[in-house]
Length: 516
View (cartoon, rainbow, N blue to C red):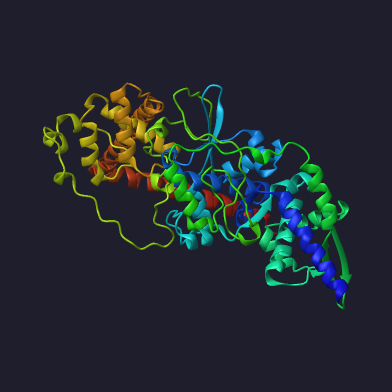
């Protein structure tokens, strides 16, 4: 009994030492995202991106969820190689979950998670929109998070092995909380293990083999029927972590603080990060990660806070760059409330009060425009703009009537490329660009040419249809003429005479072949 207690005490000390060596470099990894993307690396990258989206929603909503990172940042934070990063980005973009753009000079790659698409893929029936303050809704969408220890990927050399090792370490720490003896062997529960880690059976077997070959995991079979049991080799893990920590510690880097310190303190107090580890210095500290089952505890690597599109390039990957992050106004790409903290959540039945009608709000001198003045009579409206929204659009476009149709073409062209949740907001954005002289018709001219071609094709088809109808009517009139019946009867008699001649000929031939 004394020997068992001694071994348990020793393993307890080893786990505490491992916790100190692992430090604060951890990621809230969501296994459910692996089921969605089909790859552990893509799920890990998306989990880290969701963390940044959540953080920006609380501290800097004007950025609309955009953040930039280098390849080295992704490697430091998630442990992903260049090939794994590229493959993960391709998968996420193919699923419609990932938006990228190159901005600035020299160009940096900016990223954003398409929260609307992600929510609909995770919960097709219950999803309405994101609510970062509704912990239950976020838990229902993303599922429980696994604390992924970034240094373990350097030790194991594979993301799947690091995920499994992180889970087993978390299991050992959980036994500390329940007061179990740590010296015993543990039995695998493979179905639960695959669900909790997101690993497939093949990935799980490969990760186990890799950890055994690395002398980090011992396994044995016992009982009847035999069951597979496991036990971590904590002493060897401590040695590897100590050797890895002898290099310059990357965790000394601090996140650059946003301008709004009040917003930072609001993140500190946000219950969704319970218990929160976000200090006022913006340096994330995992603290006691064993008690943080679903907290978004992340690495603390540099990431800028200001989205500057004034020196933009035209290198576009997935989405066209926008300037509107400078003012924090929506560019129509997605509803702005997806990337701020106050949203409606899943299954929220609260009805938003309807906006006032256009007639209740007007500006001096705009009555004629709002009621459909002469300049707006011939406008070609895009389908994305509902009929009841057109009166509001006229009020917005009244400031730039000469460019009104061009702006509508721009809206129509952009809506063909992506979903625009707020067409009126997008029109308002375009009007402001025209006023400041920054408007560039990126797709308006092509959309105008396309609509003209469609109109010409439609007119040609209409002319052909009219010509065909006229020909049919002419034939009917000809058939109804008195002489037409005589000609038809004559043709019928000729056909009958021809058939009679053919039958007589065939009968004669058949009669000649009969035996006498």
